[in-house]
Length: 273
Image (cartoon, rainbow, N blue to C red):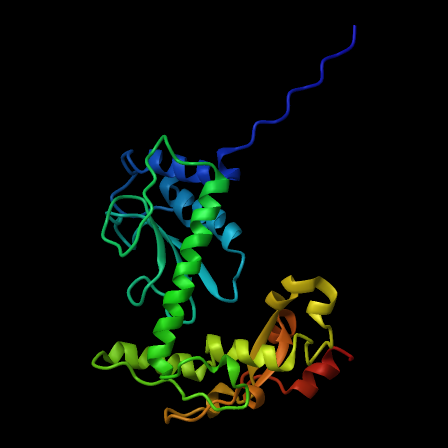
C-alpha cells in the first residue's frame, strides 16, 4: 500500500494582507496587556510589523513611499493605523495627505471600507491599494504644481523649473517646502531628468532599461549634483537636464555615505569603473 502524500502546508494568516487585516481587526477588540504601549502586546506586533510589511510588499517602492504602522506613542491610540506616505509631499501623519488603513472608523477624504470577517482576498486588496496609490499620485502632482507654479515641465527638458514656492499662511508648510527643495526631491524634475538622460547609471554604467526592460526605470534615481548644504533658502531655477545625475539606487546610497555627497568621479573610482 502506497503512503499518502502529506497535505500541503496551510499558509499562515500573516502571509497575506487579508489575513493580517483580519487578525488585526480581531486583536484590536481585545483588552491591552497594559495601559501604556508595550511591544510585547500582540496588537503592536501586528500593526507595526506584520500589517505594515504586508502593505509594503504591495507598494514595492521604497524610493517614493514610506510605509509605517502605529498604535500610539506612550498610551494606546484610539485608532491604530498603517499609512503610506508619498515622500515628495509628506513623511508624517501630522501633516500633508497620505493613504491610511484605519483599524477603527475615523475621518478621511476617500475610503474603501473592509468589515471584519468579510475582508476580500489579496487580489482585490492589492488592486484597491494600487488604485488608491494612483489617485494619491495624481493628488501629489497637483500639490507639487501648487508649490512649483508650473503646468507640466515634462515636455521642456531644457527649461528651468521654478524652485518650490512657499504655500501661503502656514509656517510649517513653508519649512517643509524648503526641506523638499534642499533635498532636490521634485518628482517632476527628477522624472524629466531621467527621460532626458536615459536610464544608464553614471557611476556603475549599467543601463537598467536595457538590462531589465521597463521595470528598470524603477531602479534608477535622479541625484542632485549640487550638495544640499550649498543650497540656500533663496528661490533658484532648477534645470533637470543640468542639475541632476542619473544613478542606480545602490550607487546613490554610495554617493550619500559622505556629507556632502561624494563626487561622481570618486564614486566611479571606488566602484573601479
